[in-house]
Image (tube, rainbow, N blue to C red; front, side):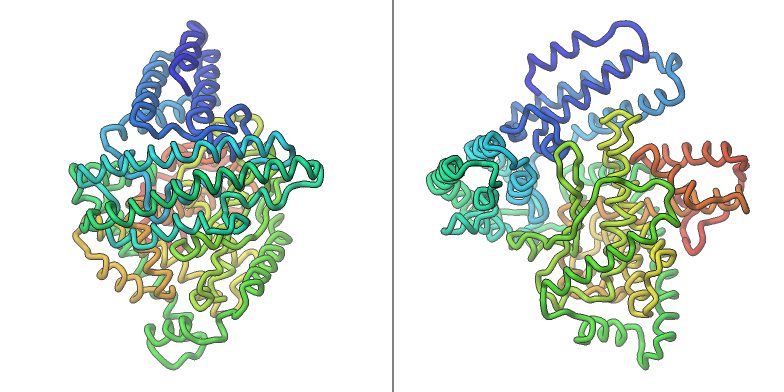
Length: 597
């Protein structure tokens, strides 16, 4: 959002009326996010900024920081006592988000714009693919963005150079695939480039002459500017950035890294837990889940110890497909079976559909097992569960049910689509992503697989436990590497010793934690909090506890910070006639809960 438009909007804020000022601040904050980060606007279907990329210049970054500080100052002037209860929740979230963002400005995150998991080599093709493609005007917008890519690449390069000068880069070992990811965007044949994909599948509503004109312009931009600029960027990464990158793997080795990591942990989990506390919770969870896994091994009648069983699961051909399409077909079959069971657990289901697609080939090698991309009714786009089909011998069938539950239904798609459809709450909140809540819900949803008729095969049940173990191990190795001095190799070995995940997946996961410190902690922390809240509701309501009503209440306000979620659900329990016990038992099978209170 440019300076002139922002200052004009700030001057127009109501001077009186707490409710009016809150609504105006929410409107401005939402508009600011959409216009400052046009890629978000594309995903949301917000009009007017379709031709732009986020301004990643140093001047643009400093402008956004100043504007955020002004929004925080304006929010402090609002009289919260004059607001209704619903408005107080809106205000609490607005103020808390702005305050946390401003506190983060003391750390130079902007000097780490690119790594193997995220950056323009990932975001650009994804955004281009998400753009509307119905009319010739839509394709003109795509062309405008293609035209501006050289500038965006240069801005990112400048930030990387500044980071390099300060000794601030991702760990060198994680950058090995980055040049290949960049070059995968610019094959000699433009029809094979993810940047131009939409120009070779244009709708019949656009005339043939217009299609030829638009395609010719895209190919001209591609050959004259995109190939040389992306190639130059890849060469810079390969020649200058990687050889001089930081060989330390612990994030806390960076300047002021202890405080910076603690901030990231708080930001991602929306709790006050310290890294050391989270590490202890992780160790307890690993011990608990390991006991359940040993019980499953006995149930199968397998003759061997834990290591032998996990080696069996990693290597036996019966657990692997030879064909990518067969893998995707099974995911779609699982998703369809789940959909038919959902009304037993949820009173309200989203209207927006979702699909299952393979992770794009240009990023699949160093991408995780799967991820979810939200859809948008405004943009006319369904949600997508992206499954990784790279190296089929690292994609076991026994993980597929738990993964589908997490990424699609009733995990990410159900929660995020429902939030988007909550028309009574402000768009600012409908589209908010709190990692602790969103990923905590995804992991909690995996435990609902039993109620959905899944995990009947002991290997699939072991797969569900493997996924729970995966997130417990995250608590141990993320904090271990960044706070407690663990090496990358020690983290990989701990992961391998306590799960059946294939080695390729384990290495990808560990490298993810190295470049996204703290993010992976949110899953298990969020799951434990949701389980704790459910245990509290079951105890307080007894026979009056209704799982459908509980889930609807939990999801009905969109994503929330975990501290706000707990307070809100306590109020819901009381509204249902329950009393909140001063001594709440831990959620079933969830050790380490007390540390989350």
